[in-house]
Length: 130
Image (cartoon, rainbow, N blue to C red; front, top):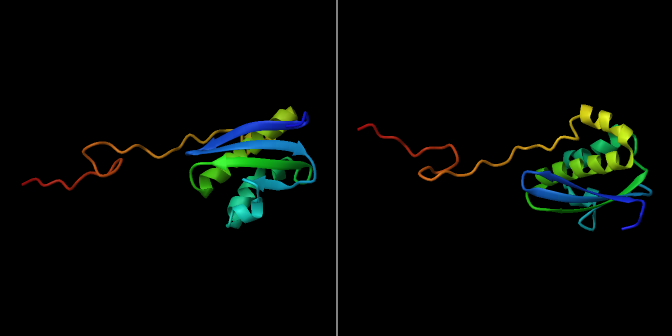
């Protein structure tokens, strides 16, 4: 890691993304793959690009991401949060615009645990009165 790069962590559900932000031409690598190839759907790719679009820094940083756990949706959210945190580390003036869009807040929602005596977290077995 060179001196002008920033390492930040983003999390969502059970996904964890380690984001390394370096000044460069704008390439985005996720687990050593191109971001377009990693996310098959366009909306997940756009979610990853959202912090860069809001701050008008789309072609100015090279982003290298190592993400693990969860599914593609959780991973996209984790990467987005990691990129937002790394951008604020580089330039603190961007924080207000990112916070306005809700990109600086860690989404706490996760799967509720299964309770014993029930088939799922909230579902109950069929009740028979008689």
